[in-house]
Length: 334
Ligand SMILES: [Fe+2]
Figure 1 (cartoon, rainbow, N blue to C red):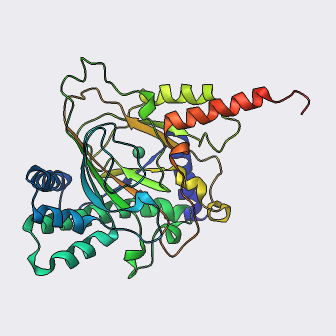
Figure 2 (cartoon, rainbow, N blue to C red):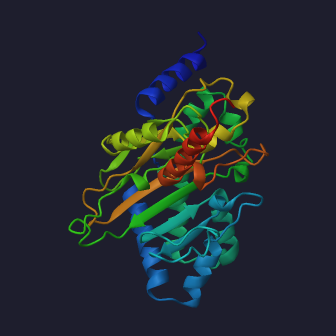
Figure 3 (tube, rainbow, N blue to C red):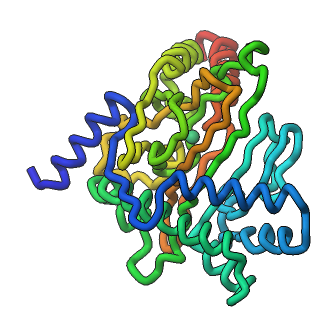
């Protein structure tokens, strides 16, 4: 058996067993604690004391990827409950407080163009740290994409790195005092499939709570019932994923199902996605996390992405229940 086929079968076995594979994620010039520290310092500065300089920083980080959908934008944003994002147009008002940074390959260029040689030190440090983490997490994905014959679909050729449209997302949750007393533990409603083709997480989690289980895309598989999916979600909440320093956890997002069939020819069609979330046992504490969402590079056009209707647990359940209702309503002899 060729080596890549053996590696692919090994990955498939792991994906079926747990929904993810572990892959080395080696940071060279920074560490995640420093990066998250820089991120918090900058966003506290910018939102704490609004100023022209702060607005210039926000504007510089707001990058568009031409021709891509809303989840490919770069930005920094302090998002607060009930407020609509200024950057991700079309999203519902936020259901929780969080600080976000979306770093794309275009970010460094855009920020450098905005400031030239007068870049604030904190911005310069943040860019360098993001570049290192972006590279490390991208590298952790490469062996998995290569084993499935998709490395050239996901990664642009050397020298054309700006054609990669992966996003590094940093997230800081401030913690919710009194959340435990108020019974605000995580619910199944927050479980989801990612929209990406591949995702990498776990290179940094400030505390444990990541949970997940292998799952098929309920929207695309007619044999999956609402009851099956509900049972799966219950199990997902009780299936912790341990994070280990130096390793990323790689899994498939619902976007994977949107790759044309010939690109997935090397893949067992039943290889599962990861239904996942964060089962927070200490919601009163702040939490930091980082994730890399990978999609096809710009030189491979014409591939769709899933919408919220096939990624959020509640949306999928709504769809499955409606489908069952319709099937039930069909005349028996039709
Ligand atoms: Fe996710």
